[in-house]
Length: 397
Image (cartoon, rainbow, N blue to C red):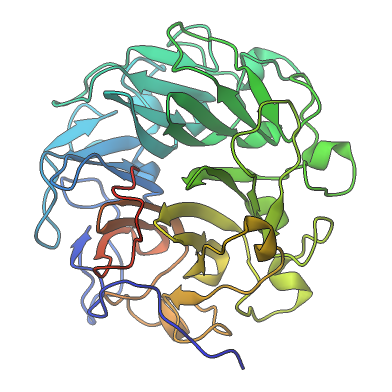
């Protein structure tokens, strides 16, 4: 059995838990929307060490915002975007799509001076040029659609295009470039500069041979360039990282790809580029296997992966050569007591400050990890211990 090393989080567990705290005598977890309650949140973005914090409250089809970094459990949100107030829910606020509505918002990131959100079931990405600082601030820009009222997948066409999106779940901004996990089209799109026009076409596609194709694994067997269900994106130093949840792996490129369909250099979670089974074909996981990994974040020398269906976080430490990581086991874990466990909240118990239940997202800024513990309807703000993030400085969401 692999010795178990813990990820460099505070051993006391999350410093702050957002969402309703579940007591032992409670039989039903409340999911009605409020300033506190969330339903299946899948993403969070901390803008600076002091805040603001924005969270995709996915099941309630809204964003929740905290003006400052929350300091106490179940702290009420200050702002809401996507619903008329804190007590309403429904896709597109039970109306038509607009500049401040959502249908399954998921990925969220700071971009330039603003914010970008992957509005998955409206098949679009919304961009605010300046950070919202009030309720229902309208977005300035939409990608994937020609305007703010349209919401058909691939703009109603069978084929994809450089301008269309289909179930886009992830978004990330890095050194002036925008990256979108266009999940339903089994591809990642790259814009060389932050777009300035609605529906602006992407410049590069990964996962497909061209901008029109959309078959899973490019219509063939899995490879170093194909994808099945890409979901989240980050950078580990200068290396692009994408979670390919449908192939139960994480893909890593050396640098930023500059050509369509560039193959990745390394996969984590599988022994090679062609095998894709959950937990490498066995029921219980180990330190090197993954089962539907959705979220990913980098903190200095650490790459942290939300191994969603195993209800755990895994961490790999950066070697001198990224290539040497191919097929290797992870170095540390959080959420489970050992690498062989996979049950929600450790043996299906009540959630604790350091347990997880289908964790969908993780992003990091400075010493704070923002973890979307979706199955527990909560967000964890978990501190990273001093000295564990290496020399990379602040890690943006």
